[in-house]
Image (cartoon, rainbow, N blue to C red; front, side):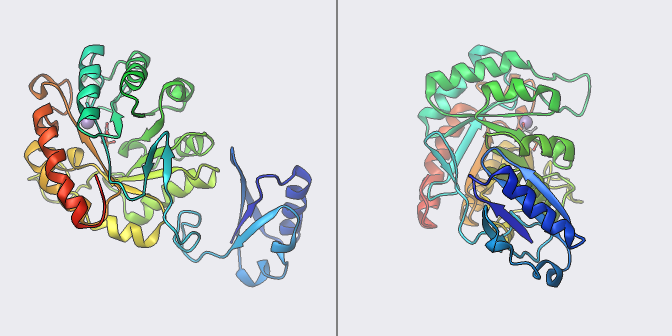
Length: 337
Ligand code: PEP
Ligand code: MN
């Protein structure tokens, strides 16, 4: 059971509710968010129900939830969540495209890519400054310098930027520049990091771990939301299977499954899922057809020279053509691009 407090609930009212829950022998889990406080009460429903918690001052609503993930579940909220960043709405009628390089390599390449993708209709600019690389000897990203270029690109194009946070120690730097904070697949189960971003006032793009089930994915989202940050965007980016033809296997059925289980928006990243440029278009079309709220795509001015993920990055003309080819698919399923 989840108790949502009114934004104006006082400390006294909160304490009163907590004491009452504890008097029943139950343990309340209090999450103080930027906008509101949520109290989770895990325990036998009949015990919790002995107290009419709805009647307590400061309580907005009380919701019984059967799923292990509570706040992110459809049971908790029937209508779709729309995450708003500036003028961009993720989870609404429009299929939102986030595009940009895997890593921000230098100022020129970023500004050039940002200008191009925004002219083609991308709504978000992606680009990593802190890169999670399999090898410690590979390019690790430009760090804060990259984030400054992202901020400059935002000024020039007007589109919000999404970039990855890998280490809680970098949170203030990332928050200074990012509009959306990305948690990469390697950190999907880094619960300390998830708790950190549960307490921030910016949307979080949570990528699915490549060895994670849908339930585990939603439990990770629950960590963020239970911290008080309801602005979570899920991203299916491929999982590891026995198949080796693609870098990962894009689990497209996860999209409608998650739509049934959760109210959160979900986007698809065919770049990291397939690892192959020539698969981006068919998988993007399929993703839109199964109900994805957006796409995350890697675009590089010259993929041959990319410092990371060149084989899966689209060259600018390929991206332009892709955007044209996706529009009719979006229209066919009642969306727009
Ligand atoms: C990325 O999007 O930059 C990235 C590293 O993706 P993932 O975490 O899905 O591997
Ligand atoms: Mn990449």
